[in-house]
Length: 447
Image 1 (cartoon, rainbow, N blue to C red):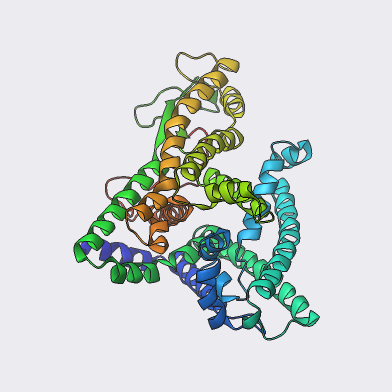
Image 2 (cartoon, rainbow, N blue to C red):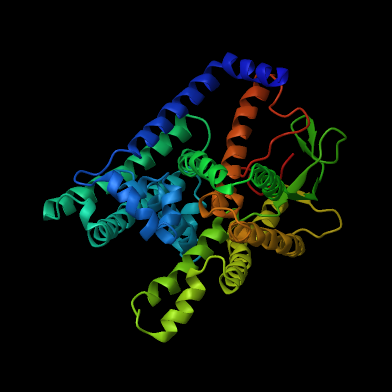
């Protein structure tokens, strides 16, 4: 407790860090406030009451978690930051197939600015489409919660929803530039974690046994520790550098004070495989809804809508493993790492520079990705397992899946930034026993 108080005092002493944390908290409060401001003509209380029983368990319920309940309340931030995330994923995937985007990715800061601009344009298009779908869903599913169905309601609702998402994008960029942590990720995390207190209270009331609730909390803590281990796990490949003269100094070679290595994340793809797999799993369920009278739709549709079913979870786990390899291949390029090493005079002991180094890194990456993908799949289906064991669906989502991975990843990133400020000012870091490692460190040569 004394060390915690001392750390907080050190954080307060650093004026820049204090101001950044204060600004971040203010901007996040603005986001939470907007999550309760209903669209003009929408009865928020009516919508919330009917949403849980009609659509709370499907894809809309999943999206509602990421926007902090704004979707079920019909607020100005109902779509949240998700259209921007979708646009970013599209641009990133295009970078693996479109040479023009690949060229921009290699142009440094100027290229990144252009890609950010393209991402914003794509966000506007995606948000407009999702806004129309959201309003259509409101009018078709909750007509009693809407005061007017006039064309002016359509226009105003679509424009406000689009403006709300773009405002959140601006808010996230301000947090990234002037606050602490990645603003977009923090907004998503706050939206997810805002549902935790209510779910925790409901679970305590519904469990009926203090012992069972205590076991649930212990299990949740163990799952969190396992996910932290997965997020932090790294395979370090040692690297040596040839000695060379730079001015009057000899650079490279092995030293006793520093070790060089290539850190390869066991889970280099992060949460993206789960997001992709969930998107794929929602497609069959959506298609079968258009054929309600078909016997095939009744049977196959249940396979893709029963989130606790064996078929659903086996398919889901297989897709996650598949997408983990796919996204890791996009995120980490062994050839680029090998070329970078060769240009800097580095080499892996016992491995020839160039193609052999690339093949060695690719082999190591493939081997560590397998257990990482299996573990990621296990984390993804953990909420379904928790539901089968008697945990309520609202609280079960925090036992794994996208929600838990995002929360832990963002918290680690934010703590890493705070620790960097403390160490730069010659204060003790947040952890006495070692450095905090977040998701921000890129694969490359580390000294």
